[in-house]
Length: 462
Image 1 (cartoon, rainbow, N blue to C red):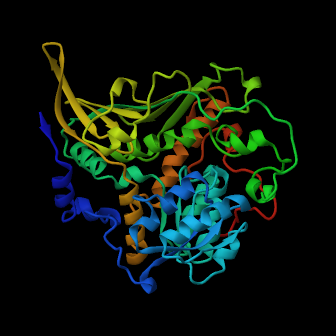
Image 2: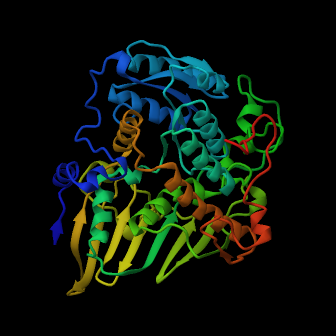
Image 3: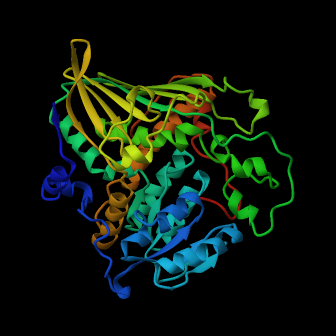
């Protein structure tokens, strides 16, 4: 068995084509710019400063502020209470400089000092925040999945290209050195020819809530702005807290969590548009009438390519499936693959590669010996937020395309929408036109674009 040393790969890749392709900038210490003068800092505006937005802004070790060469000029969120809760932490991390706050991020877009926004909103806001920012001349770091509908993604790509903006999607696995090594391993033919890939997203239930009555909007929350591009609706705690599982805001857990595995698998395999997509499943483990949920808790999808089949499997029940935890991410160890929630299995003619996202590492298995597994090659991983943020900041300065450019994030998110179209149509098999990104089903095309309400409208002309 050979083990690929992470440091050796990092040192080597920084000076090879692998390290610089597509604008990758791999630093041995992504926080090496702590002494950056204030005038040279990248000035940011947070659009959404909740859980993920707060993490990206102010995590002590893997955030924009922990680097030392970024500064937040604005914190924007429809919830004024959340804004007030974040001000001191942000100010303390940037030498006492207190950011301005607003419940309407368009104020930040009007500030010429802002270089880029960091959009960590619910999914239905990703496209509109990105398009408006590009039109305002700002670069964008926007969380996954890239968009809420296929058409929105097309508009995001068009806006980024027209206004020459750097738009990085939050698919940070593309910036992880261990995943770069896995991709090169596959490109070098060490797995042989690949004909099957299995993507898994199997987790215990989470974030579930019984149906709630409509109620008064909580003090300090601009519900109309939070609801934004979605259909108008009175305030409802169930909608507000379980939006991941509602079609009006998101696409279920295939969009929420599995988008990471789908994008990573697509990148490792080097494929773009499938020829056909089929998906089936349902909400079987719980009574959908007892929960605020429309998306499935059991889902399978098949993506067909020339001589390659990619499958996706989702379950949201059973405490026996475990996500890769921080101990595995931060040390030299691997998950127990069989019960790992977010693994990818790549079957080649010469070996089986199992890959973990967000620091799970990878191992290549060949024929067992004496009924014991034989690992031919392997590499440990680390959580790649610092590298992904570094890549974005470097591209803001260099104007190169980032590791998870908007077009790549768009195509990966299309896989999610195609599967959900098929699922919502009772398992209709859809053929994909790679030129238009359309499907061959009129009923499915009705889901290609959503209806909007003023003023929260993704523009036709970006």
